[in-house]
Image 1 (cartoon, rainbow over the protein chains, first blue to last red):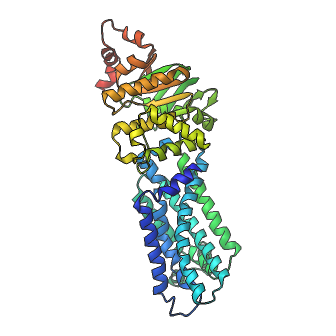
Image 2 (cartoon, chains in turn purple, blue; image 1 turned 180 degrees about the vertical axis):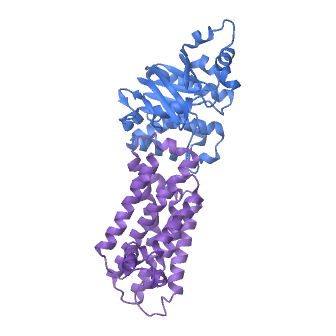
Image 3 (cartoon, helix red, strand yellow; image 1 turned 45 degrees about the horizontal axis):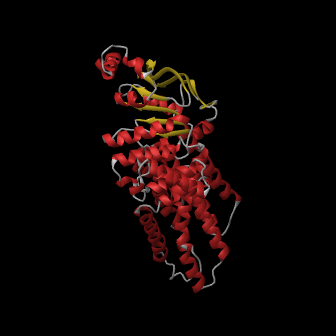
Length: 235
Length: 242
C-alpha cells in the first residue's frame, strides 16, 4: 500500500504525469472528433474506441516505462528490497498504481461519453463494455511494459521495446495482415493469429460483447506478464 | 544478534566475498574496513537481504535471511552506499513512505518517529525541500534518518560519513555512538580514525577475505608505534600493488 501511494502520487510530483495525460486526452478526443464523431450522426463512442488500441500502444509504455527502470538506475531498488515488503507485493503495487493513473486518463475521456448522452440516446451498456475492454487492453499492455522496464536501467529502451511488442501483438490479428498473408497461409493459422491479437478482442468488447475468450485472453496475459516481472526482479 | 557464517558471493568466476564469518552482539559497533572492491558492500547487501549469498548464511536475531527475509528486513535499518532516495520527494514525504512501508501506520506514532529522526539527523531546516535539491551532506543524513526511523535492532551503514564535512562527520559519529547501547551496528568506512573513534571491533576485508578481526587497540598494537593508517596499508599492500 505505501508503494502504491508512492508510485501513484509520483506521477504528479513532476510535470511528466500531467504532460502524458494531456497528450493522451488530446489524441483520443481529437482522433474521435476527426474520424467523424459528429458527421456519422450516431450516438456512440465508436470513433473513440476504434483508434484507441493504437493510442494505448504508445500511451501505456510511456506511463509504465519508469516503474522499475528508474529504481534500478537511481539505486533506490536497493532500498525497496531491504524494506520488509515481498517482491510479489511490490510488483502488484507498482502495477496497480500505474493502472490507476491510466484509469484517470481513460476517465477523462468520459467527457465525450457524457456529451454523447446529452446529444443523443446512446447505448450505455456498449460504452461500458468498451471501457472495460480499454482498461483490460491497458492492463495487458502495462504488464508487458512492466517486464520490459524490469529488464533495463534505461527508460527509453523500456519504452521502445514495449511499444514494439504491443504493436506487434496488435498487428498480429489485423485485417490487413490477414489479407497480406491470405492466400499463402492456411486459414487455421490466421484464426490462431486472430485469437492472440489485441485488436480483435478489443473490437468485440467495443461492440458491447463481454465474451469469455476476450476476458480470459487479457487476464491470462496480464497475470503471466506480472509473473514474468516477478521472476526478472527476483533473479 | 548478527551471525554471519562462511558467507560466499560469486559473480561469474569472480569471488567477491570469500567465506566471511563473524558474530556481533547488542552494544557492538563493528567497523568494516578494506580497499575499494574488497567486498564490504557486497557482504552488507547479503546481510540485509538485497543479494542472495552463493553459499553460507547470515542470521539476524535467529532468523536466516535466506529463509525469512521479511523478518530479517524488519529488524535491520540499512543505509545503502548510494544513499538511495527518490529525488522528487520531499524529505518528509520520503521518510513517511519508508516509515509506512516499515509498518508504522498509526498517525501519532508516525509523527513521533518523524519528529524524532528529524531532530536526531538535524533535518529540520530542509524537511519540506525536495531531496534532489539537497546537498550531499543533507542527503546522507536523510539516508541515516530513513535507516533509524523504525528503531531497528541492527543497523547496517554503508559509508555513513561519506561526503560529509568534518563537523557533520562528528555529528553522525556521535549519533551512531549514542544509539549503540541497544543496537548491533555494522558500518563500513575508508576512514581509519573513524574506527578508532567509535568502533569496538574492526574487521579488515581484502579481496573478499577477512584479514583481521579484533579490537581497534589490538589492531593498532600490531606494529608498535605505527599509526592505524600504516598498519592498514601494511596489511592490504598486496592488493594495492595488484
